[in-house]
Image (cartoon, rainbow, N blue to C red):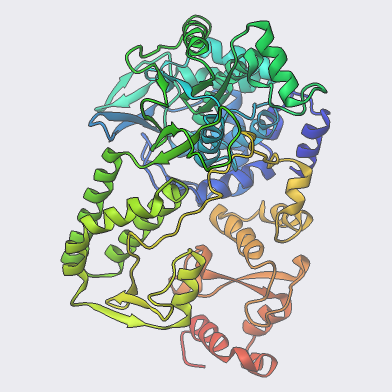
Length: 590
């Protein structure tokens, strides 16, 4: 896999013969590892399969299955379900079988590193190490001098992706392997199950599938390139030798429309300096998407915003601009941009907080407190880059203050434990008066108004988000952990293990602990690494990650010998761990 990334970077990869890498055992092992860590691994597909279905098979057996399904274009129908949207409607969600997920993940691991080198910087949707905050940063930066924004709304984008155009766009971006192209073509055209009935649907990429986000970005790649050619690349220092101001001045003299676009999945903005340019962009963008890409445009929601007079909602934020105060040092013609919390979203947060607090009041246990803390931290992390952050969340805290007080008053205690302080301070939460934190039934509680504003979260840097390609050699060398050679050795050794779950977690345990022994605390070379079950399988143990530990060959041999008590003399500081291992192994007191 390391060699593949280097070949991509140097342009030595034969793009007409990619499919053998899809069902390569190393690639299948990596795909299986990522599937086992995904959030939807336990969701049942149309055939009732999930990640547990793959456990009895070895890596080599799974590789043969992937090869057979890829070459013969075997795939199951998608099970369609619906999830509620904030506007009261329902969003269709497609759940694939675990076999289809495995094949899709293997294909994604092969073609995504190459496609990432082709995508333009204005594309932010569902890409590795690219977030919504980077898209919001670019919008905020560009609106300082360009207050007119064209917002394009596509109607059911994922459901109207055309298979023929997707095939053409894959070929245009550089994917020339006929086996992969034919499989993706068949993937778009396959139908779905709804209410136990098969429905044929020749269009659309299932939302919830693994290949769906990548296909959607490839589908609109040439649209992104076309928009950059319309004047979006004037601020790119890698284009030409002119200074930015000279390049923009020369473009303005030509009379061409100038705009900078930001795309997050199907949410498209074109930021313009004048209203006339925005009107011209509306016509050209609508014509391109409807005629060239066969997509549907929602004319009612596609509109032009003048941010000096009205507010615009984008990715959960609300944007508007205003002239700076006279004493504020600003360049001529520049505005100050404010990004705030929409009133509708504030009401939704308040309703959700009240719902979670009622659950805590009814069932005061770890699960309900964890749900409350998780929701509050998630809201803070997403919105802590907005203007007036403290004021908005102080207002939300005031609206739920009465319910919060009556929920917590009888069960709250004060703690000064250092472990709690460390965890809270890592999240940016200060203690009460610098002394400690409040706990509810022994569990620490986060208040909605605690977090502090992060001024750098939406700092765009002249509208250019600097990000290294995560698949480049320079970026891969920065990743901490064990060496790639050690991982490749473990993958080769694990191919023949019959249980794929054990094969994956055996590698993950060594990688996450960086090869440190569970008993000695010293580094164990990969050639001497033994993976031990803390609770043996014969005594009811599992192959889960938390039931495995890293031991050296000598430690493992002594533990399974007739005199495991010798470990007490070797590692006197680890008596509790040694005692637990011996008791679990022999099911008796040491």
